Image (cartoon, rainbow, N blue to C red; front, side, top):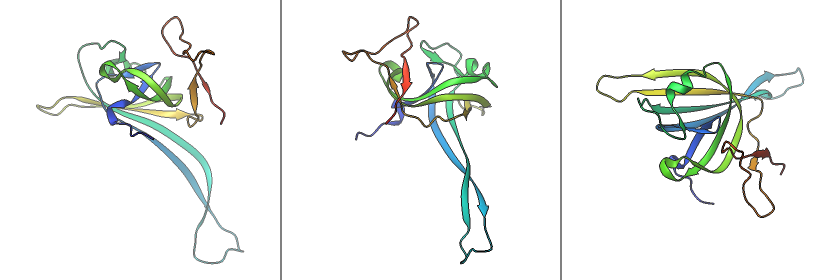
Length: 164
C-alpha cells in the first residue's frame, strides 16, 4: 500500500476540485447515548450508537482569478445552504486536478464558510460540507469491458456504489 501525499488528496465539489487548497479533512463522528439498567454491575458506563455524522473541511487561499477546471472560494460561497455532490479522491496531473482514484463520495450541504484576512498575510477561506446520508461507501468508476472509463459529454466520469 502506497502512501498518499497531502497534495494528492483533494475534495471535489460537483466534479471540480477546490482550487488553491491548502488542506482538507474528513471527520466521521459516532454519537453515543449512555444507558444503564438495574442489572448492571461494575463501574463501567454502557453506551450505544444512536447516529453517525460526517463532514468535509477544506482551507483554500482566496485568489482573484479564475482557475481552469477548479471551483474557487467565490463560487463555493454562492453554494451556501445548497446540497452538492462531493468526492474525496486522489489526484495527479497539472496542479493535482486530475482525479485518479475515488475514495469516498456522497451528498453534502455547504454549511459553513469562514474567511480569514490578516494584515500582510494571504487571505484564506475555510469551507465546511456537512454530510447527508451515508458517504462512507466505496464508489468505483464505471468502465467498459476493455477497462476504459465511461465519460459523459461534459467530461464527467461516471461512478457507482461498489458492493464488496
